[in-house]
Length: 133
Image 1: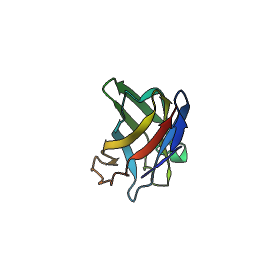
Image 2: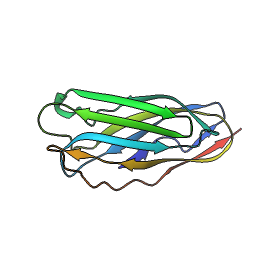
Image 3: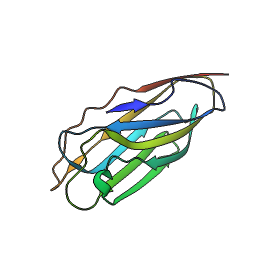
Image 4: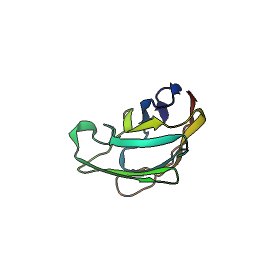
């Protein structure tokens, strides 16, 4: 897993940050939580990436932004098989509210394989931002 996005921006700027995943075992469900500092960043939108929809499988995606600084997401895939190839899990769109250094990090992720088995996943390091005036 890894983050893709800018590391430097100015107060008032909007930016997109993508979480990319590749799996050794086919994934059919992906609950996860992302943490951020709500004093420095504001979530504008969250959208599903193409990871679980590989091969044209139908998916469902939901998210909730906790005002305390978390984005809780769940993505699931219908049909047979699962997703393995590297692709975007989700795109988070933020707005920079204040200058300073800030971190966006994956707090937890619990990929599920076909049949309900849990897949161990290593968390990527935090995405560090420098926000200037």
